[in-house]
Image (tube, rainbow, N blue to C red; front, side, top):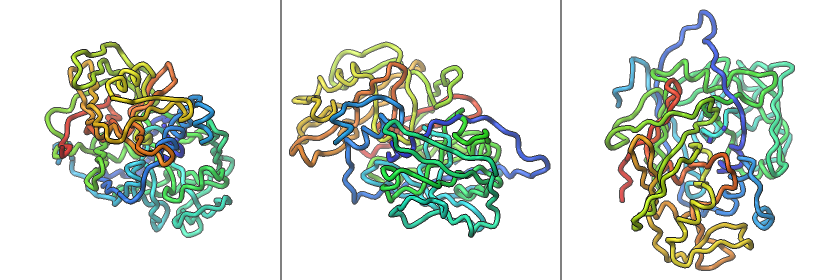
Length: 411
């Protein structure tokens, strides 16, 4: 379920996908698309908020203190691009996606950690500060699915629910007709207070949505339109040069081979194993097998406490205490070590230490919060944007696998 950043909180949606056939007799044009990801550097991130949202998204209990406080893959189809904006110091990447006829463009979070396509609309009763909503009455193709609704409740008791429509979607020039669009009717104030995001575009692997009765997901509809059943994420650290691509792999964006890892059996998320951990500058590797989810909708990298402790043991004067919700922090003048994650295929991802340095504390002068934090789940961890900004990521829908490659990080 895409994918915590509000990205963490609003992309919380746990849903399930099932494939559907193209409508009988409808001609499908295979296409590919690039979605650019420029960055907005003008906002300081709230680290504790992002951590709490990440835990809430994945249903993990939190400390009371924290709770309070080109192209060889291209076929003959068309290509396109969509402008986007990175919000709050790389907290989330919002892409302009069109809804309705004519298309109305909203800032949505492309989220591999969820499956619902959820937007604020003219039906939304909750007062919001956002400028853009989906005005259903202005869409000539909006068709209400009578008897259908969607409803989501989060770990902190925040909620959202609404009506379900069939309507058109434009993602980077790829038009999807009769797609399922979820219109918000009522949303808790804790969700609606984020004025930057207009909705979530779920891209989880095999989740169905929260729509009842069950409906096909937008990803399953999109898949049938792509030149190749893949999409990629090239998130960039404090840069406007990142992009998502759909239907092809942009080989100009990575260095060397793409190294693939199969998804775990019966995966609903983009879920897989990695097998090694290493703090650069230390001689030893930790070798085992850890289950994780690749989630563009989570800002942080969340792993088991023993892994997190191992990393911060190598950081001078790093500490974790209950008064800050168990979050790890350290002197801001510290140079953090690089962190390496190894895979069974032999490839090693290297996350630069500066990526691991997430944000400062207003109420703790001179101390900074790390982008790697503990996740109190025995089942899996989350490789969010801290990890994904260090790699070129391929999400292979047809092959049931993820691929990672090195890229120029400009270091």
